[in-house]
Length: 505
Figure 1 (cartoon, rainbow, N blue to C red):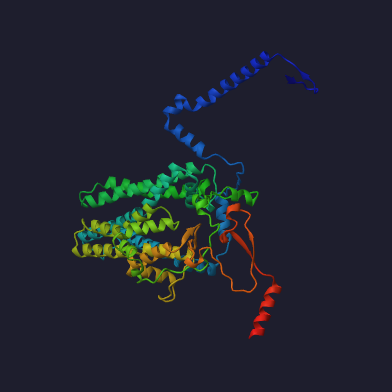
Figure 2 (cartoon, one colour):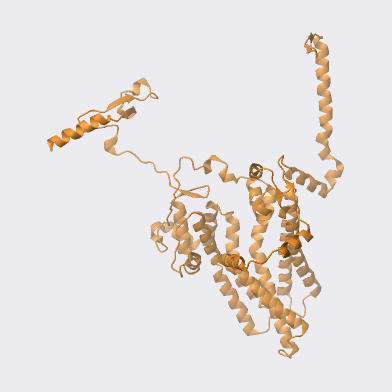
């Protein structure tokens, strides 16, 4: 039976209708088969680039609310840059804020050391120091010292950054919602969605990992061969690959869609494109029914390790593992990345600078480089102080103002001079609260009734309290005093009780 266009109904035989429906189903199946077999084309199977394009198409699906692009040309950027007047007061303020972070101070010291070594190397190559170093042997010795120093500085930087870069490569391969949020915050401008973001992130992360491996190869050539036997061509290729890969990665991240601004017609649309982390989307991360601690406190003092001796023992003998585990439950990233990075901060400088001193002939320079490695390894404990500052600011914990009134300096000093005690205090503090959505909440406590409160209620008032049975209980439980709702007395009864009490007194 088929309805006609004028509202009437035309009856047709059942068999014909069945044939029509069957034929339509066959046509649909035939049209669907080629679509399913398109990915199985022989060209796609044999081409790695085609597979990469398919992965990119699946992971770079454009959302329906994609904002429009507003790229700025290079001439417009230069014109906009030079048309502005420099506000020196705001620049000084920005510099002060930047130097308040201990990690930025370390980066500045690294840049200063690289700059000084580069200038000295340039002067040695151009012959500007021939009057100060008249002998060729002296110039060769200083050239090797500066070369090994630069090699050690860049090797340290790659060694510190490589665990995070490998982690980002793993996140790109998994591509889960929580992974997308972390990658966008690291590589996308403003941490928002960008067109073809997966493909562009893959290019940047692969180049950054290539930078690390090329630097490792350069370090191996500089440490494994003496200056006279070292293959200069291989060293130059490795250094050039390390420098170009890092530079291309930076330029690509800035000039591709990852570094561009995008206009959004509605603010709600841009907010809808942000990925909510996994721990904030499920019920176990909900603070419903919990009491958020507005003024949390440290659990004991720095030297109160007797409050939890097991935690203090683990902080002493398994410092690196406890440190990474505690940061992961505080929502500061992957545990294994923190363990590897902390180990490299504390042990990497010692080995790198001692290896750099192997091919140097001067004993005094060898001792200087070895001592520098020991000092930098001790200062690697400041990595824990940096994360203590992050923990204190995120969870609004009280600060220590014992070091010139600077809480950041105090946190770094605690980790530098008493790292195990500081770590034990941080673990005890995290144990004292429930961590929910970057907040400290009070722990649930199951309060059991006292023995005298086992369903027996005694009232000293002369006027008995009225009670009504709970409607949610069965008829057999109505006589139990535990299952009644107590109705408070009226104000008139309370006033009468007070007047009687006054008359007795």
